[in-house]
Image (cartoon, rainbow, N blue to C red; front, top):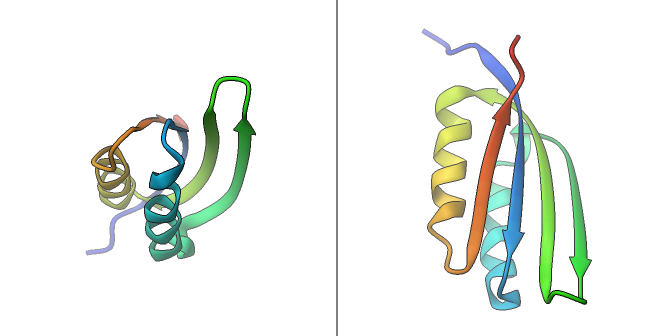
Length: 83
């Protein structure tokens, strides 16, 4: 049985530029579920801020967030649409 897809937004803070390649590779793997992506380098604070809009099953969103959260010096939070 196929799981219903949900709309979600992930906020990702990258505190070490060396982690960006790992993050990009992971996002590429989940590219079929990504509706949009915005990345902002914030050089004043030495971080990159990435926002990802997703349309995916809940398990897929959770799996991606978990994998991103396991990358060193990256923080991730997910917000879900109510519908």
